[in-house]
Image 1 (cartoon, rainbow, N blue to C red):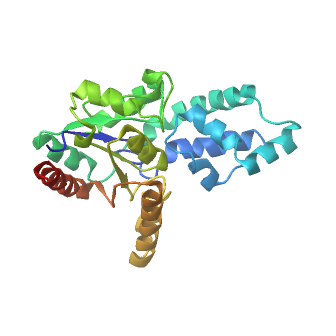
Image 2: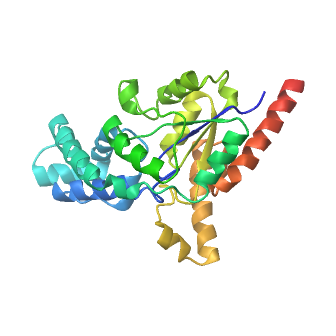
Image 3: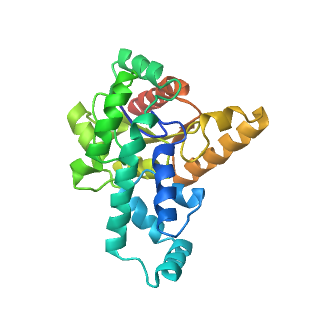
Length: 267
């Protein structure tokens, strides 16, 4: 028994270092609605289906109270839909610019394929959003074997496990023990744990770290380690089986998991 399938998240994991495409738009739409939010508030639900992300933000006590103060009443489902419509419009305008593969992703995917591993993917983006992302990412050299969006599972995105199960079915995965899910948010980790597969958090370039590539490289070695350890703790506290700093470490990690599976089968 060994790992047969690796399922990647998209923004903040495979493309878009720091996961800035959606974050920038969340900040904009709430500011336009008269209720500015912080970067931390905008990032907290990252990885969820985007309309669920907006709903989760509106349910945060501080935002909820501020919305009531500014608008004279609690938010309604109409408000959620209006914000989401604005989000979708603004995101589609900028999405293509945030599709550069993150360092080591292309090389790692090639290495995994040479080892006979199939490459799946899940996302918090809808079908229409992913049409833009997949097209531009493919031109730049990144193209997984399969993609599942929340749209394809009845809008039951993360932390539901259904996108992972659909990948497993399409890619012919025989056991959850032979599947690794890698992502950059706590939603990714919850998705993996709920599916019963190996949950791996990637740190550098992640939404949890929340830094652009320029911001990260401008830090001293000590400052970089501080940010890395902070994100690592978040992943570990939510229950990730493993963390890696970059994709370069993934093949060796898979070998470690395979060795554990071999021992398990012997016992």
